[in-house]
Length: 448
Image (tube, rainbow, N blue to C red; front, side, top):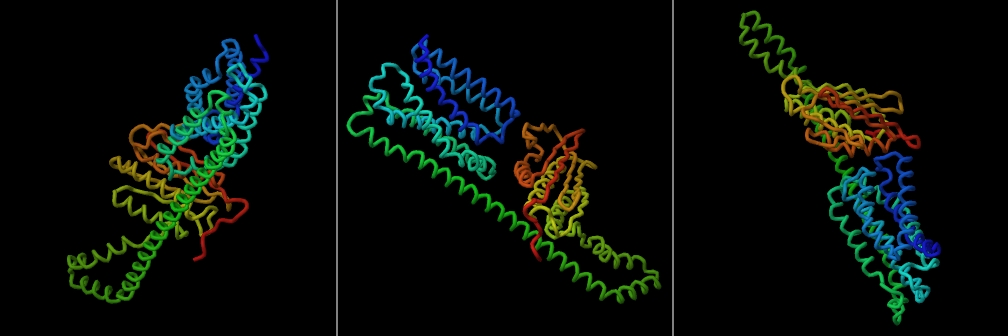
């Protein structure tokens, strides 16, 4: 065995190491498997592929691409198993890795062409292979912030969930094109001024890609801001509606108190004459008004507005909803986040309960403070059918409505270093949440 040749093949196949890093970093937080298993499996797989592949290629004298391209399908299947994301997001991250490392290889072909003119093997010289690794590593450094922050943030953004089906096409096409334009031989590269022009021109490819990532990330943030503004507007409208109801109730109560003397005199007159039928007829609207008196569910106006809104929704669907909310004006989380969490969960619970009959049309909501820094929320309700909890601790199916908005709720809970536990037992769906006040800032309700 020619160990010098094997080392050259090993260096060329080692491109899979930065490629693996570029593919894994954006999806690392979404892993299904634990860290020891992931890193041990990765070390074994990469070692076997680079060392075993180098030995095989050096013996058979075949190009590394002959081994690498067919292996991509197997590598993606393993990649798909290890991370909990939609398949289109995983295609995007995986294809982006292939595209960036494919660019590094193509650029290196132009960069090291003079070193390859006398190369009689179908593998880079040792120096050219080392330079190629350096180019790929440099690309990884340039894209570090994009890989560590921007792409994961975009994957987290629910506003983009439907767009990944289209967005995943871009890196796939880019990878195919960048590999296709890779020159076959160094002699072709050295034709005229082609090499110099390509070395300068090709530098624009990663810069343009980086810019496009930034634009997509910026748009993602704008969509998030828009969603938050819509939540705030919905909250404002609920508060305004609640204010109008309170004002109307106070006006009616004031009028009722003003007419109290007349009511007593008339009631007394009916009793004296024994006209109980007329008395009952007269009292009926008064009793109905009293029974429909305004009910304050929470001292916090924003939370009270949300609770009152869903209380009316539940009553319109003939669903019994029990509230136990003990919150003041000072919340440990933003009001908009609190109302987004509460609104999503209560709406899901009402939707699930509406599928049932009789006494099972029930929702229980408990919200309070364990201490000044910790908010606790628990919502449980009966449900119909079968709910399976996935590896991301969320329901796999949203048949009964439980899957809707839960990913958004989970993201908000994580933002406050909290925890969310979903339990399904004996036909009862229960969500328990803890959220903590941020240490560096006090999140309070806006002054009213």
